[in-house]
Length: 266
Image 1 (cartoon, helix red, strand yellow):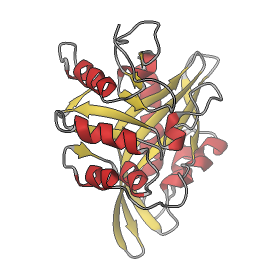
Image 2 (cartoon, rainbow, N blue to C red):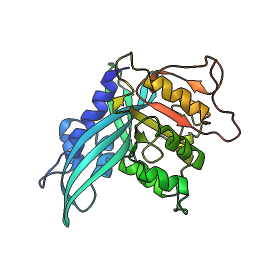
Image 3 (cartoon, rainbow, N blue to C red):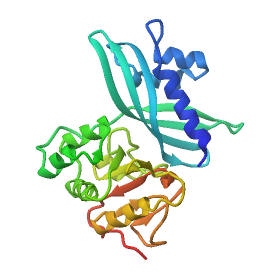
């Protein structure tokens, strides 16, 4: 779906995130032709203690697609050289793009990550998810779970799914768009009640047709109580619960909305 959007986002991040002693992330972007306003937002990729950096885009996931605007939720890995030694970290970055009059896409800004709030005591379910080798959590999602603020029912669904699948998580809260793009409606990700899965048993959700694991996982998640199940296929048509759109061909979204029934098949 519109691969030029992902390519543009990835190029912006790679240009910003690879610098040495004689440069900065912002300088790199300005030299490459980015607007000073867009370049300034890349400072999130350069901690104040870092003297050099290398960045790799692990996976660019769609966060929203509209006619002239888009969002990419990109998981990146950084190898930083700091004043106190090497620092390897992962980030999830919310990249906002706009279509120029000529039709090309350009990055407008990187959105600073938000926080779920002060930590709460961990539940047994949260501890089990953190210890589960079949739930592969990038650093930002692991930090989200450690806050104790990710919904316990959602975590229980992930833990149950891991008995049947190996789940590679893309994003939970940190780095995700806080609203349902392009609306102002608050996303379940914003309040710790949603997760996006990019791989199942080591295979990307965007793998070629013929792999039934995404559909099996979607059905099983609904059986376990997920009220929102988005992915490459809508399994119940106009009824609430399951859904699909251009954004959800590259990941599976599982969410919990209090008061809503679990997603039901046709």
